[in-house]
Length: 130
Figure 1: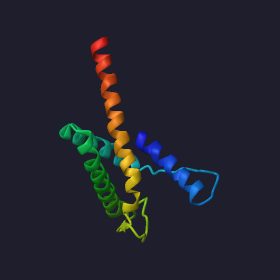
Figure 2: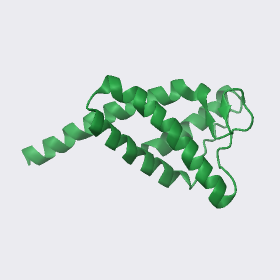
Figure 3: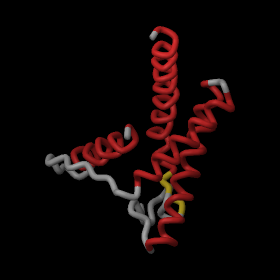
Figure 4: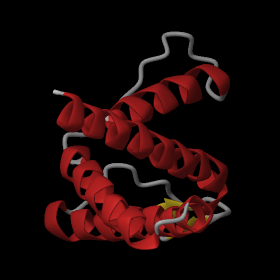
């Protein structure tokens, strides 16, 4: 759910900053529920396997790009279109990934690492103090 909220905020900010559309209507796609859900699960497994924030973050960014590319490619094959198709942009790969979004994905990976720590602490607190 956090990914969905971040996407809506990101697209709304894009409208305001880039398009000068102050309606700031953020959007997402129904197809993003399984993409973000699967992505979060895969990143969680990666985080558990790596056990290190400094190594997790760059691996997470690479994984995010791979998840974005693979899910976009699958959606193109299944429904005939990738909902977030970027078109022919300078740092794009087949319109499915934008490498110039690396700073944003880096922030997402850091945030994911931090939120996982907080959620783990909260669960441990509940399990051992109730």
